[in-house]
Amino acid sequence: MKQRKEIDHIPLDLTVEILTRLPAKSLMKFKSVSKSWSSIIRSQVFIDSFYSISSTRPRFIVAFTNGIFAKREEKRLFFFSSSHEGHESSSLVTNHHMTIPCLSVCSNPASRCVSVRGFIGCSLVGGFMVCNPSTRQVIILPRLPSRRAPDMRGECLGYDPVDDQFKALSLISSRIPNNDSVEHLVLTLKGDKKKYSWRQIRGNNNVPPYSPLTMKVCINGVVYYGGWTPKVNMNPVIVCFDVRSEKINFIKAPRDVVGWWNDSILMEYKGKLASIVRYPLACFHSFDLWVLEDMEKHEWSKQTCEIPFSLWDYVGGFQLSFPGTNKVGEIILAPKILSRYHLQPFYIFYYHVETSNVRRVRLEGIADDESFRHCYGIGKIVCNVYISPEHVENIRFL
Image (cartoon, rainbow, N blue to C red):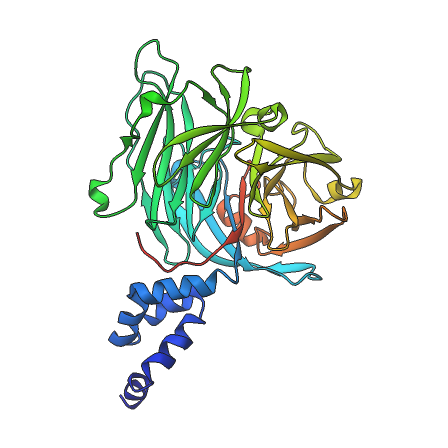
């Protein structure tokens, strides 16, 4: 009792200052210390303050499955994280955040587990999930409406910084017979989850015809993805979906940017939309970095980047992803799958565009323990890896 009274008599401003400096995982536990602490941690002012501080220390999120062909009851989706390293670090220690059972994660190359303001949007087979590794909240969104064709063009999580709202965007083939257009469905993650429902965006019928192709990335309230308009292989464009207004417009794009269809790569590079163009079907020793320099004028820059042959000595196979950049603008390369059959370290690579230097960093704890691999059947079949390098811890609940 004496300790409890001492805790309660800590000045409020000092208590808040201390709590905002703690990791999110600790705060979730400390809500049970006292009613006053619980009230502080749950308050919107504290949540906003914590996020503001957390955004100065982004983390790595590494998500991976235990096999795309595992039985449903055996499937697992694991989330690990790590703080960012100093420039000379050769390894990072990852910590386990959460494990979600019985999920069939979509293996489409254009689908990813992407962090948006602390929440992860993850494409499932026939659905979409939003989760927060810090609070362990998991939301499985309602199934999409039935349609005449099984084709689903993809979905993603977006954030509107003006109204502070999260929205899920899904693209499906038209439900109208003999119509090859795309339907744009939106779900606002707000209010009673039992009442969540997909709806068509306003003015859907006024969107010019196009075929969506690539992965999606949300930058400053806009979701970007590549496509052809009005028909496949005609005019390459970047489709821009404004999360707040839900309006869609096109930016002209180089053909190379969308040329590999769902194997094309979009990312944020120094605050701008960028694309990595490489040959995805074999080991590559260079890639082109396309950057959208002027959205109004549709102007792009291009730079060819050489990578050393030795990089491939540490990658099983030839499948590499480009999940994004770190704060200093180094481009990150990482294996798309975990090692099979043999226990091997999991490495990521940082590429410095100006100097062409590549440095290797080992992520410790990513399925590099024999007992862990044996317990979950990791390595018997293909296990996909998804990385978000600029994840910011958020203690908000949706």
